[in-house]
Length: 108
Image 1: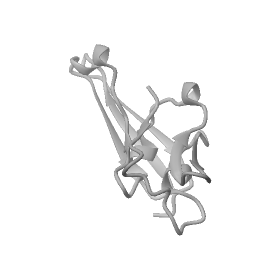
Image 2: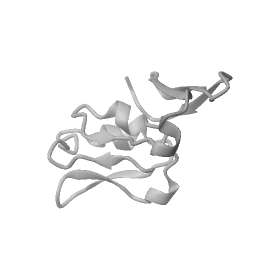
Image 3: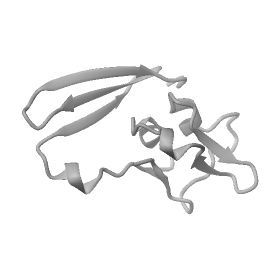
Image 4: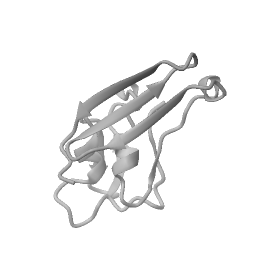
């Protein structure tokens, strides 16, 4: 499920040359509409729910929703923002842990 932008919270990161969600998205899927100054997902079907935009948003204006079908399992997905990357620590329903790391363009 692609991230959901809460429009009344989104500022489009005014004053910055590029919004934080655009910087953070490793798939270059986030953008800011120049007319509304609000973020949106360019190609929702291409989003793979990395949660980089959700973690990077300074206004807490982006939500990532987990489908209810997997929400009740004992699995977990913890995104950890680094300087120029996001690391996911995934635990499946059997307790097996896997770590993935992806680069982004954040300057933190």
